[in-house]
Length: 353
Image 1 (cartoon, rainbow, N blue to C red):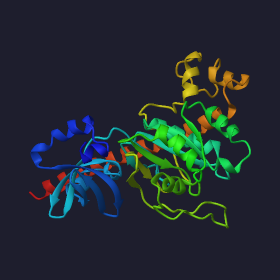
Image 2: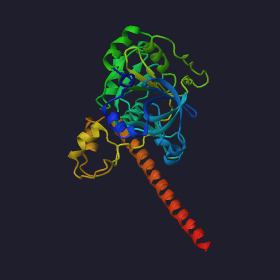
Image 3: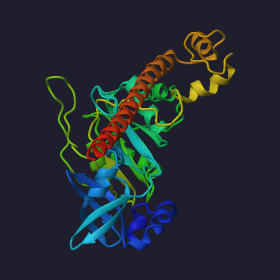
Image 4: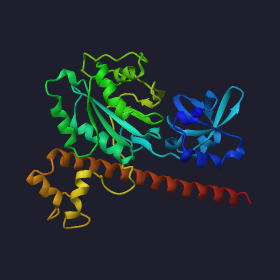
């Protein structure tokens, strides 16, 4: 097996790479990004590289190489220049923190996302559904990790609550400090040459989990703030790390905001339980909010659809509509600006003669 294959190189990337073989470029995967420096793994080892000016000027920031991307790099002595990014299999994104409706790509080419919540104080079902919704819409398999299960009397209750959300994903009860429990779930869900990402708020135990998976302390584990009982950030950047069993994991900084963007490209929030019932609605374009003979509203009333799921669905739906409307306004303004700039350019050119 080649070094690239051990990092997830497959036929998808090979097919797109072969188109560029005449340019004397190497294929590499982005392991981490620190400022302008990108640490890459190539077929012959690691190399630091920067983005080509043409790449920066021709792409939106969300299309710049991210951790997990496969890129085309040209060598110059001991460093490299990233010329282009190979098409992604998928990308994990969120609404960028703050009030602006912009999309932030966190990582690319991910097989599954481990969504971690701590059962001691971090557990929040509404927040968990937000993570699940965005991960699913990004075409990534979610796995829920309920950490610190040893600190509560009946952890199975929490597993049942998560399963009732209806995303049909694995839900793991574990303690990062219990090596036996760690080995049980990792042997099932961590596969060689597959790429995973750890998601969750600060203080849920992601760093402890990662250190346990590695078998050594990669970084110090964060304390909990005495002022607000919230976890402190220990991871400040994303890194793709090779685990002893040959799988790879991206450790993401703790995120208190995880806004959805509607990655599916179609209208609406596609929740598994809602989608299953929607064909029974009287109207094909039912919004499941006020229409007569709505199967979703009826299911909430008769108890077959949890009210928590429905309320969260409506909240995410409003948030997604707002994001998409703002994105449309932004693109419309950019188009108008470009048109105006061309008119000004033509006017100046004609005025010269």
